[in-house]
Length: 235
Length: 250
Ligand SMILES: Nc1ncnc2c1ncn2[C@@H]1O[C@H](COP(=O)(O)OP(=O)(O)OP(=O)(O)O)[C@@H](O)[C@H]1O
Ligand SMILES: [Mg+2]
Image (cartoon, rainbow over all chains, first blue to last red; front, top):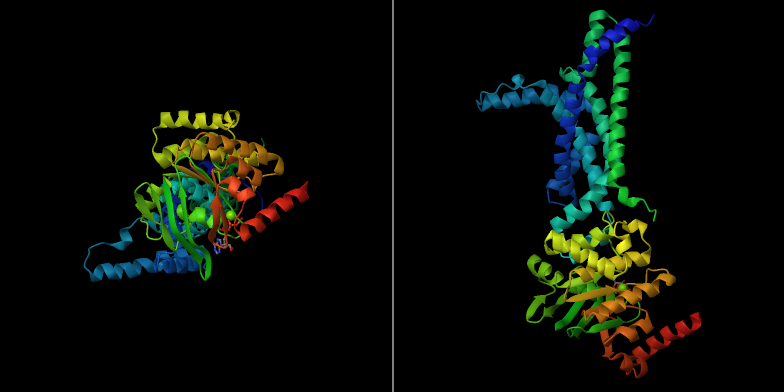
């Protein structure tokens, strides 16, 4: 077998065209996950009755199953169930007209939310309680103390862990092809199929993912460094 | 005047404060002495709501607040009359020395930003740390951190500042400079309640000494009364032990 480098170079722009789709899926999922994980971490920390049990079950289910399986469930089973329900109530909504991207967002954020929740909860707990007491004693209310003192430090602690989840989410977008969303991996599969040069197409996206993830990690490291700049103990 | 009345506190079955009352006049420096576990910290924490008392009240003038049943509003109002200097400093780790003082004024007391900035710089200058204003707590020595802690409390101009063993976490060579700053707070006429194990400092700075043991006030009086003519046996023993230790250290 010889490597068709010419094909690789020609296919590359075709594949790179889909990088925004990959990024959009990942970014969308991460943003949705941020909102819900914040809420869920709050529920766990405040031990909100009933809701905290539900969140805990959700966390175990997500952490205990492969993401590809979660996607199949969401993509294959959920729509049929929902459609049956919509037909029953005569809502006139056709579930199969919903853009496939939404299933991808849902599946990806479901997983990211679970990991973010854990990271945020642990990070908030890691901030020394004495600082909260000091905040109260200068006259801050609990919400102000949380936003001004606790949260900024918790973000610095959570970020390295969340960075892993973000990278995992970018990688997991490659599974969105299973839900008929064409992103980078999907594009490679299609191009490979048309030319029967799968190997070259996959080698292309191999490098695309490497560079993408390297760039994301680099940016998040810089952000983290800036967030925890106060820790350096050099007088 | 500040009147602390009938404060009780138990942790589960352990009764830590069993009916403590205390009067503090305006501008007075009250030093609380007592053996470890006598409830000194717990008393300060109860009157600042860092701990919920089982019973008791605190009154600033005629504003009486129930320590057990206080609402969020009562708590906020009471805390805004108080300042607290912690044994372990408890500076905001993500804020510079300046921001530690400034943040309290702006986020805790709603002082306008420009005024807060001036006050914060003035307070830092006053504790001799203006040149360290942009340092984070991790970049400061323990003594410097505690001086920032004191500046943070003083800048708020509270009606009373509570000090809980402000020098006991410090390396011995840093105790002196910190005690000097606390003496200056006292000289400013600020009302203070100070828990300390530093006897000569207590004698120096106190208008009134309160000796606690086993969750009760055993004896109170002027420094002269307590140190030279203690009435109660428990006070005598405590002082003998502390001063004995002191002699031993030399
Ligand atoms: N959160 C808590 N839970 C249970 N017991 C506590 C708690 N805080 C304090 N205690 C107990 O209450 C008693 C009084 O403690 P406190 O810290 O008020 O003593 P102290 O006089 O400040 O002593 P020290 O001089 O060692 O600081 C001790 O027996 C302590 O173990
Ligand atoms: Mg104590």
